[in-house]
Image (cartoon, rainbow, N blue to C red; front, top):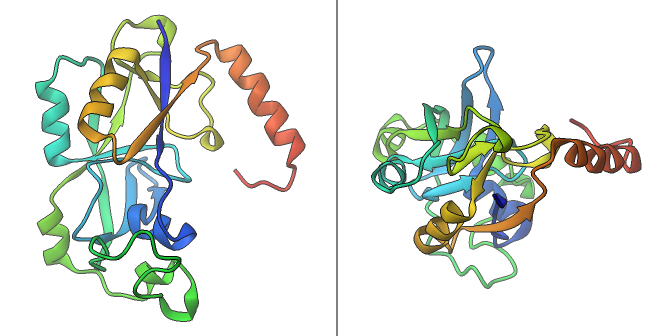
Length: 202
């Protein structure tokens, strides 16, 4: 079976756009994915751009569950901070966003504003997709990424059937790349990447 990794499409405005689209994420001490992000607009499906997670909205989760795709498991994301930055109507073809954050630092879109509980409630639950089996162990449509590592992107890969479904339902927000499902090869490629860039942080 052929497997594909999901990637986020290129965000407008570089790092500023990536911060507006995905915000910041980390793992809590209990292993729960925590996010700090802008609202009210949230991508229906978001392969977090510097993380290891695939996040979907509540409505997109229901779409996946009502499809015939198999293997996706869901755990709720903890919304630590949600702030109002309604950027969805800004000109995405412009060189810069309509509003720059304090000091021009992308993270200040989020850190420079107070958490808005009502807005967090408005956007609804967010869910992390995970899978329980590796590609060689399953014929489902969602599987653990082979040779998974934080630097390699989303920890979930999808089948060709899932790729086609996702491109039909969310083509504006994702792109896919074919991968080799053999963990040994993936680990060797990752090892070369890390050895060629010793200063890169995990």
